[in-house]
Image (cartoon, rainbow, N blue to C red; front, side, top):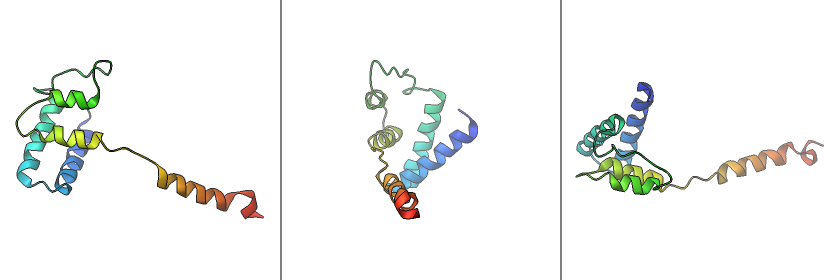
Length: 103
């Protein structure tokens, strides 16, 4: 992973962590866990095999005390992306740009 990419991930993770109401001490531990994860240190040394398990199961295998990175990863994994607002905007733009509107 590129150094700038890792730094951006860490910064965004800390911002999100603090927005979730966690303090500075746990944010520091989260940073240490992110570093261990990037280095493939235990407990993050397990190879991810999509045929054997899903993302949630892999994170649940990574057990340690105060597993803040696991908590954050599972929370992010549970977010379902959707594009309803984007589709609504394109619909409105289509109404403005279609043949009926331009006549």
